Length: 546
Image: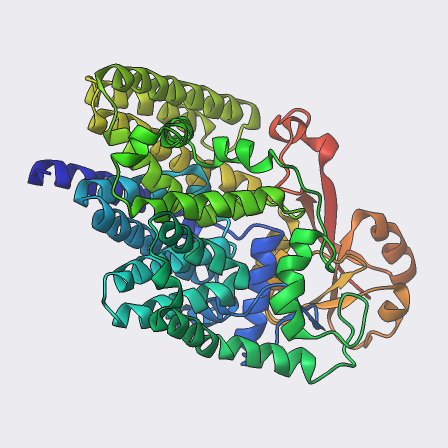
């Protein structure tokens, strides 16, 4: 790989990271992002690092590590959307770095660079930079563990410690199922290559022991909050064990659909999710996977590549057979997808290079048309500028990358991601978040009534208000709670339109400000179309009681 080529790929990565960084300055999206941010806010404000609480109640769903990281960031930068997103952004870069290292060590430096670029430019990674949840952390920690265990497999023992540390971090983000993508690829690799002795080597059992040691902070936190307090009501029951939930219900309970949190499984769910989540690389990826079914193609690859594609395959199958499925789960194996795609991309012959050169160009044009249509109908501020940018982007790509080659295919594809990143983070999400009424209400209160203590009346999911309002937000679940309020206090309520008339009639409420609301993670054509949008909006109000 020449220095010029290296610098070109590095420049593409740099520009992509700069575009992605614009997401740090946007708001936090409901429901999950705002929920997690409000939990971390409570942790930081009250210096309570053991208990996870939502609306004053004990919360048992996710492990503690992502909340610890966000709370530490709040301590450093103050409570803000930037502080919440910044750790996730950094660990996204860590994930790209380990994608590069793993691909470089198994293949070569060029494959490592292309893999990192593909990972960072995948649509769901771009979305997750803005809509921050827990999956970016798992992705980074899981791949870091795989890389260090791969190095440990090559006789370097300190990598056992590093790999176990990162595996433990992944567990403290999502649970013990993450050991499947971490160890699954190695076990299948050893079985296929008949390295059976690896299964009984002391170092791997030492790795398991170290993982158990490293997750003790999580186990202690769960034991302190739940197992020491069987009287607490969780999921409508008492005698709930946090440790049991951590090791069983949150993982196998969801898979078998017999735990407290249930879902509906669809075997094809992640097949079609990958098509959009891994844009603009999904067509190359699926062709690369099909290529792996050819024995001749597999034999031409290093034996260690089995670790990559089997890790992805067993995790993908696990997700597909699970009864609880969400699109962002796929993020965990996008690094493996990126490496598979990068390897296949470099093995294209002249004929297939031309085919994918045309396909990626077509994808670029379709994405530009789609984004332009959305901008035109949504009519957000600066939508004309957005349309111009998404139209110019494929034109620039056509002029810069004229001849079919690996770099040209990558170049045209990456310009699709540039368009998507800028459109989503700078224009679209900024406009959509204006309909997140809890955030708008919290920001309005900070500006107009910074010392007010806001209370939510009979509405359970005002997570963004929890985060953006100053201090703690109190929830009133019925009108009896409302009657008990101290009449001497400056009581400001956040109420839904359904309750407004009664509050005004019975409590002499004064409307301070109104806000439009829509469930912004479930977009529909009626919402996107500015003309029909008013028909699907709900309304919330901040009112003062007299």
